[in-house]
Amino acid sequence: MHVGAASGWRGLACLGLLTGAVAGCSEAGTQSPKPSASTRPTTEASGATETVTKSGGTLGAVGSACELPVTFDTAEDWKAEAVDGEVGQDTDTTGSDSSGDPDGGLSEEVADALLRQGPVTLACEVDAKPAGNIGYIRVWTGEPGQDDARTVLEAFVAAEDGASKATYRTFEAGGVSGVEVEYVYTSEFLEESKKECAFAVTTADGPVVVHLGGLDTEEHTAMLPAYELAKRTVRTT
Image (cartoon, rainbow, N blue to C red; front, side):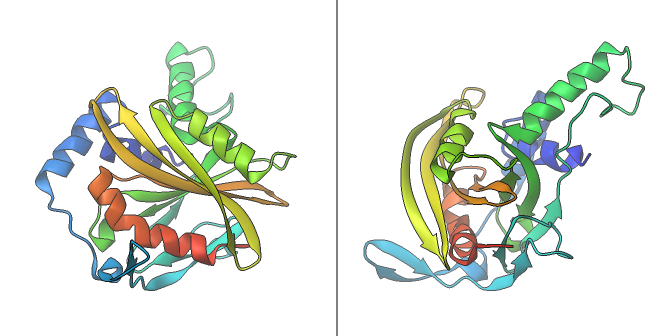
């Protein structure tokens, strides 16, 4: 299981275990995030900032960093890495024999909490740090079922403690219909709030949720062009 990547994102967001949170806050305090050249604002249109976002390649196809039920373009310099989200009874995230070991069960609980949210499991992380920002686009996948994209996305948001003020809307992208949500996440640990967003589509292989968080609202806003690129180019595989 690729637990390191999952625990890393919790650390950077200061929302995971205490050690991860301290590390994330320390890192945030020593860096000076700045928008990358690929997401530089250019013009104003219809009250929103248009940006130039260069594609760094397509993610999701066989042979790519993450094989997914969908494909989409990732922004230039963002780095994708697959996450093994399988958590089962035989999983030992501590390196010791988990059978009969209460610590093994606790580790499994922690891993499950990190890797699953509502009906979907973390499958891929696309890291913005190489492009100059602190945050990730994360791709979550689920089992095939009867739920539509709106139902899946509502369950995803409901499973995130601290989420509020969610607004939903539909979108179309190259023949793919999906639902998008914007909401506010409030951390009890940090006593701070920030904006987050996600979109969901359903496929024959199950639902897919693509989520953008960020260290804070400023970082989230700086990374929105990469998220919009993913949404604009999403296709089923």
